[in-house]
Image (cartoon, rainbow, N blue to C red):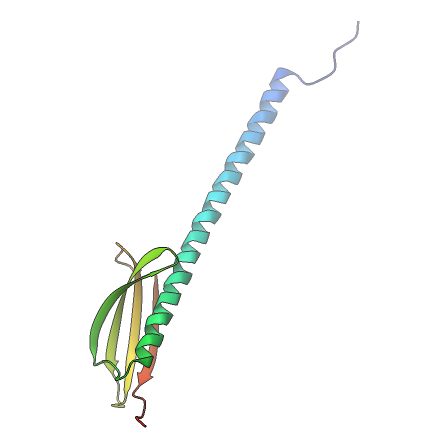
Length: 123
């Protein structure tokens, strides 16, 4: 009498269970990577918005007075809200500029950027 060769049903079920556990771990890892990528993309775009606001403020003539301003812009298919704090410095021609950028509807900034601007001499 010949014994049949192959896997028993129990061996197949154990192998399927191992594969299922491995696939669940891979899906969780992939989901975590997608979430991290989205967060990195958000911070990058918010940083660009902050850099744009800072550059526009530095180029403004005359330099804005001290105080807080806010605005909205659209970049990367998203709406962004920003605040700009203009502060005096020890040099009366210089201003400290602090920009915070928020995703619409959130209270925590996605990016912040600081810089200094000065009055350009008039020709």
